[in-house]
Length: 250
Image 1: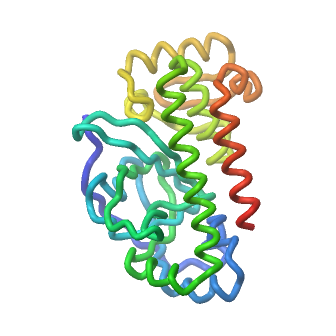
Image 2 (image 1 turned 60 degrees about the vertical axis):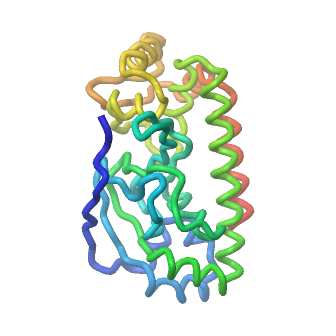
């Protein structure tokens, strides 16, 4: 089953600067540069399952999440998927526009509903060209996305599903800053590139070890340290790459 291809955005009332600053990339900009791009940002709300962009399609908008979570899916033959990145308030969707790309290579689908700041991609490209601070922040973040995608590809090829699921849950926990969240078997199967029965078996194994509780898509991480031990080293590599990039940007 494919996620829907069309998305209807809900526009919210213009948020205060503090709400835009809940996105850490925007917050990393000097006040003068941030003030210049604030009028160019539209506040939107997104719902679970919304597709913000589709692989191979023109990239019309850039998104800076506030409290939502966006899964970046690699797509093969229009139906097979694998999550190659996860974007929360620490990042953005559409960073490759800064590198001159007009189309997107991934499907960006909302994993957790919430709010974001949105900008027209052509406007964003113009702003990047005149804003060195924005360039610096985006190049650091793009490096992080590439490192994340490479590590997930390695993980998907060489590590067992139970460890991969543990890694995915821990990254989601880090992005949301919460031990409780909702992820269906279907969504996890799309993200991990496996059948639903595989997700069920891996989740059951983690639950039997007392690491998580998983019921009808509701997940609670009971033992983060134990889950990290059950995960592969890819989790630490992805986490540290993101932390270093964000520290350098700030």
